[in-house]
Amino acid sequence: MEQRVVEIELKLVSLEDTVQSLNEQIYEQGRQLDELRALCRMLVRRLDDSDSLGGALAPTDERPPHY
View: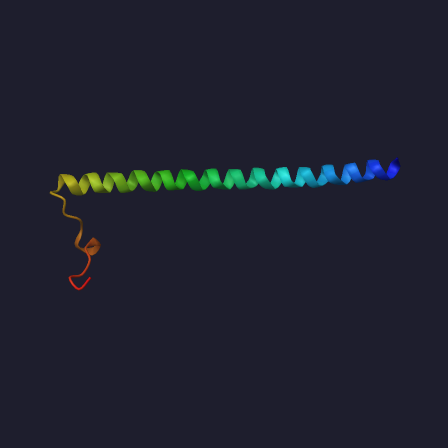
């Protein structure tokens, strides 16, 4: 019976570690998602600004003629 309790406790510790690891991954992915949303908002603003200027992007954004 004692061995069985020890095995259950070991499994519980392993599960707690797994839950902690998954929580950390979820937090990191949420942070990355926030960054991507901010980047998307910036890109949308940039496209809107280029549309208001007649659709011309900055020359550094244009592909060279040989592409």
